[in-house]
Image (tube, rainbow over all chains, first blue to last red; front, top):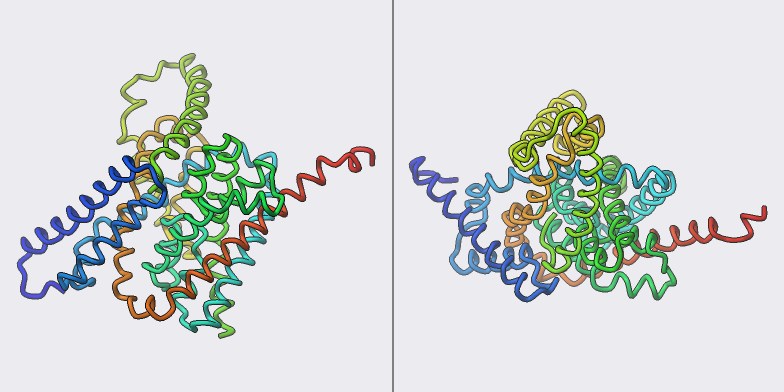
Length: 239
Length: 163
């Protein structure tokens, strides 16, 4: 990949690319803080800006990917870190755990299968189908599962953000429209469909919304991590 | 994760913080009877990173033994159990972990930039993919929302109470 370069050059290039990535991200985080809009998602716009930059300057993605390995490695500890919110929700789940577990298991199974079938019917591309079917869970876990199942990581990243923004903006009006008005039901639905982005948005409405959304976020991610490998492999065997 | 509207984030932090404080107060009451926890150990972020490292190492060991889930997910479940059984203190790890989860978005940027290898696909099928994502997100919202609302309605209905 870096043929003909000395090891010092490789270290320098890695540092440069990592610095550019972190710099752009931090800059956009400050911009979002000033503008206060959910659409200014720093991760999404960092990807858009850097992609445009690399296409214009002709940087090959393989080089960038190799140089930023150290950032990608941090996804592993980030997934482990979700053990804390899971632990914090255990006491909440105690009272409703049968209902919540069963409901999220069924709903996630249905949605994974439907997404997989739709993409396979329209596009017929296995890796894209895997990515789209994992969109409802939080990015760290979605990307880990995509790697495990040989999906397209970048498509997963975009699909996850899109699902998050959708639930964050239109989730509550839609739920009110279909007469789902209880704070618990609304929180659970938005946490399941729109993970951290949705959870952050509806935590503003009430604490109960926030608590149930974070339960759904973490339970959905755990359930999906356990069922997706088996479910997706089984469904793909039909195509 | 991540990447959130700073205003909403503040709101989230407030609720989490509130909950965390009350948990910590309860904990402190228990702890102070035995030995007062020092301010330093409460704040040290290394404690949190150490807990993650231990959980991740155990996760990798589990992954070698039984490769059903990715090592990091075994690590997540291990961390939950370690906190549950009080091997690590949740109050002490929370500072480091909250920080990590808030800023983790930057780690997905390299993965996301991989989109430049799929430009042809996006041009051809982008709208279709967005359509599928919209439809299935609404499906999930509706399924979970409606069923939980139904369950709550059944529980609260006067019919059930008289039966």
